[in-house]
Length: 499
Image 1 (spheres, rainbow, N blue to C red):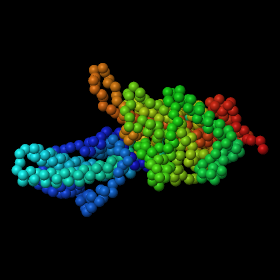
Image 2: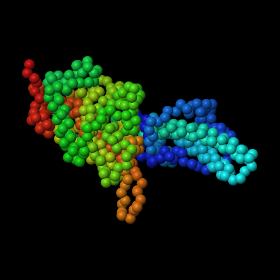
Image 3: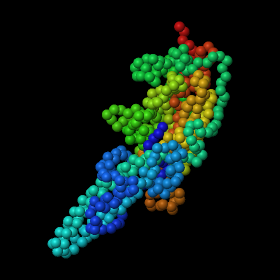
Image 4: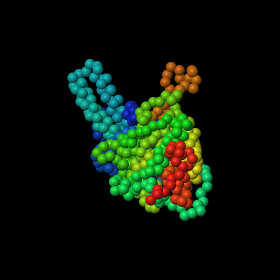
């Protein structure tokens, strides 16, 4: 997914720094509008005869990420290479140009402020009436100039923020560069099952076993919706409860989440709620969206907070329904349950210290692999190539399981390390504890941004596809894998209904 949001491992730049005072020259020798023109001028802007009008059209960002623009400027070559490697649409040249213009305008603003202070100091002494009046008039000019410049500085920083938020996260050095075909194999588990009879896909199995109703759902809700029936309902509940119990054993706190989130929270997590190819359902007339994953409300749960070092890591496993437009999705491989608009999912989410995120990423992919191995699935784990990371992920592992009816591997989960990309937007920090009793004693340590990670524990429809197609029998029945049977009341086999 192409996302236009700011990069992650970029150091913090507080918004207050945008307005930091700087010492400069006297205003009395030049009118304020000349100073403003010079401050805003650059080779790319000089030809623009209506700069003020153009600036007034800059959209106001709903939120502002903590971006270290100086770090971007000082590491221009590395940032530019990363943008190319990720096939990003971010415009680094524009960001750097706007940053320089902002710095120049800040200098001009401070020139006015210094002159204003000088005038104020002069007026404290004994003055002739004519001299005092002259200083009063000079003060009025300075005040008007400051008002104009502050307005233009605000517009400029808004434009800069929007452009800088398009810069993607940096990329793990081991990530393969290129499109999805460049992704590398990490692990292969199990073997393709050999069938001695003609196999069916899950759509035909569901029809024969009376498990789904796509036609009625299409009439009620539209295409790519479905009803689950009979044992399929039990299978969904079994998958949820079994997965939840297994992940909780690993120290994860269970959650159910809101399934509507504010558009700003969706954006902060790295998703694009507006646009022609968005995967997000927006609620007309509101600033709210239906969530596409529980990652969004779980990430937002600690928004604008400072966590205790002792509380980390925070590990959650969240159940939610998910809603996706699946814009542009078509073809035989997307039929049935494989690609739908609404589905149930369990999502793992971790907030941790920066130095721990790589190890927790390995833990998440290990949990996923253990779950799917326990169900007897044949799958492969991939280290996804740079074009497939989207804006937030520093590194992403996908698991693709063999689906006999489809005759191919299909993605059933992913695990992403987003480092501090999301936390810089959501404002989630922690305060490290002193490493020794004497170090930092009596004062608070500087806060740092946490790292966030997410991973799919169970996306129900695709798991049902895998189980039905891999465990089908010649007589048309489907065997239930052993781990799920206690969660289905002991049911071992789904059999065709007697007519």
